[in-house]
Image (cartoon, rainbow, N blue to C red; front, side, top):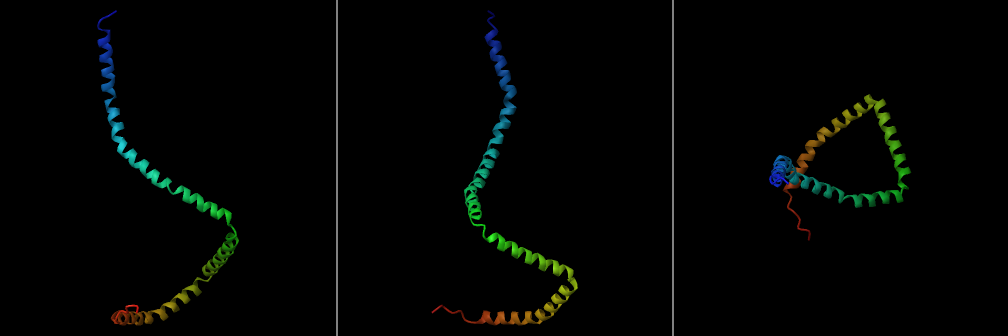
Length: 123
């Protein structure tokens, strides 16, 4: 047996360890970021049981869905009608603006008057 064989093994193992050091350092440097990401995942998965409970409630009571469908159809019909009558909608908005504009000054004055009123103590 060669007496230098154990020395070569130690040197080879030491060389492999030294060669692996950059990868080890990179892995260690990633650990804090990985820890933050795991904490983020943990926080987000805490909401899952509540979401499941909400989905089960919706599944158990779907009676409201037909009513909602009717309301959505009504809204859609109204929007389509408004799109078809853009001139009428614009005229109505102009009229609304003409009515609201003089009222804005009165509302401001009323607000200033109410700011000056003494506060009531609730008795």
